[in-house]
Length: 274
Image 1 (cartoon, rainbow, N blue to C red):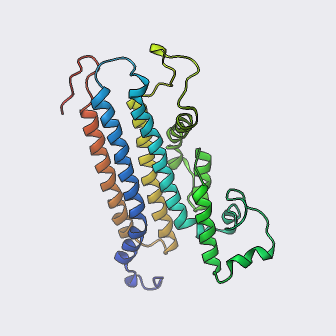
Image 2 (cartoon, one colour):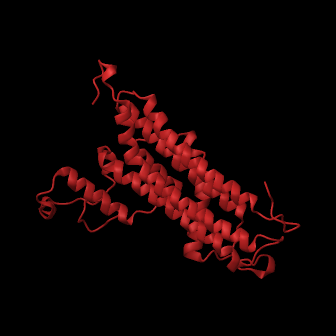
């Protein structure tokens, strides 16, 4: 902990490095997965993007696979955040997590003292960590209400700035559920008598961009919270981490731009060139 009375003793670089070391691998993994989804979209455009009209269901399944993969990447990131920060949450947040070894992994239950016998030799922190880990192994985030609950448990305010990503993410989670649990089945046949809900590159990219923006915003929010916990010190720390985020965003944006540049004209079938 830096000496508040002596700002010259504050080691900005060490603080930035520590925070970056913790958060950067999560974001790196997310953007790796994000680029894999972009690749699916690219393959769809290269193989089936020419011409007008709705594509056959089996062709659009590449986009459906991307939707499922994007949701999985978002859940993976959220679990990563939770593993880091839920164990240090307050009593109210931890009350929602079952004790490791209890019957239910989803709902906390009251337990007698004897249940703790199986945990002899563990510290309280170890038991909390284990309980959080067992909980997250079964936890899914099927809507933005559950995402909001996690953010609040981590001490991140769910304000308008983060909520702006929620409409698109909510659409993504619902469509993922429809694809996984209902095969994206449509009760009423669409054009060409297709019995699957329509999906487009434009809609898929809207969902992908929302996930990307949400991910980088949450990381920045965590950094700001950690700044407050460390006496609200370092602009240098924020610049270092946000610089990393900006590089990731720029890389993902360049891939998107290349993807859009390769999209064929719907009338001529000729690929656009920058």
